[in-house]
Image 1 (cartoon, rainbow, N blue to C red):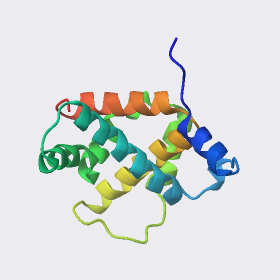
Image 2 (cartoon, rainbow, N blue to C red):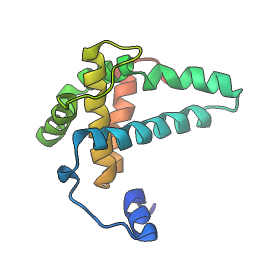
Image 3 (cartoon, rainbow, N blue to C red):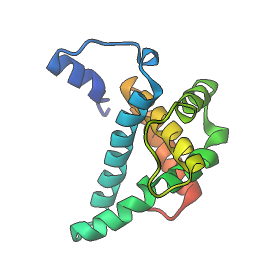
Image 4 (cartoon, helix red, strand yellow):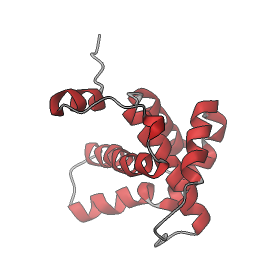
Length: 146
């Protein structure tokens, strides 16, 4: 049987971080870490699919990490989200923004931020399996396989 790895828990233990209720954090904090973990998952899949020049890896990756695609993905996943997950998504989507979207509409940016907040929340609460399930299904529903 494969051992389950809870990366946030390991990081907390190794670096002496305290375990805090993630619901006490701001939605933009969850989106901040969610953006990073989502990007890491997509980059990992892209790299695992084959060794190629970094520019090609980047082109493949941006198809999935741009706000427009994330907005499409979260809309496509709406029927899969639990009540709690829908609440976390809305919490992130409705956050007060201090930056502007560069290559997306305000609506896309808000939805993408909501998705990133959900990914961050799932990651920080040790629900990696669920996070990966949603990302995989979002890719299946929205676009070509990586």
